[in-house]
Amino acid sequence: MAVVPASEDTTDRRGFSGIPLKVESQQGATADEVVAVASLGDDRYRVLLSPGFFRGIAAGDVIVYDPIEKTAELVERGGNIAVQVFFAGLPGDVVESFKEKVKGAGGRIDGELHSLVVLTFPVEVGFTVIESLVATLPEDKVEWEYGNVFDEHGDPLSWWEGAS
Image 1: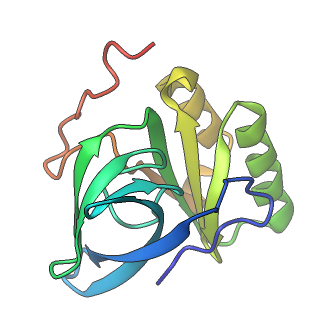
Image 2: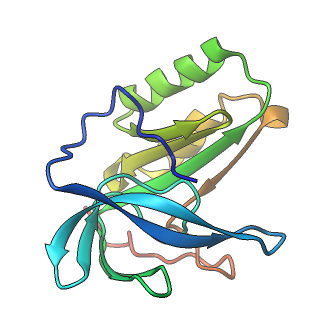
């Protein structure tokens, strides 16, 4: 279950590879999400595109990968906020308009599936802007979440505090 990079994405893919990271659904089912990375050597990778399902990391982060457990340990934050927007029944023009607003606000589209758009924003864009963008979508057809802002208990990670 890999999120397909959007065709307009301009991420430099030289040295690109994908690593499978284990994700678990709310029902307990597991699957692998292939996450785009560039090798830094010694099982260290820079994440190139924010994941659609794996939590805790975003594009730009440096991770250590465990290929046996299919897990990633964060080594260094890249200064980006990952956002996953899940939608059902939205007209294509609404989705396209939303994606253009994201780009206009300084974000980028890192991938998409039929009912999912994965976004990456520099932390400098700010949570207010991100939340205002998502608020332009019909509330009854959209669920969204930050991918690297809260821990598994719902507590803020606060890594962005002091970021300029």
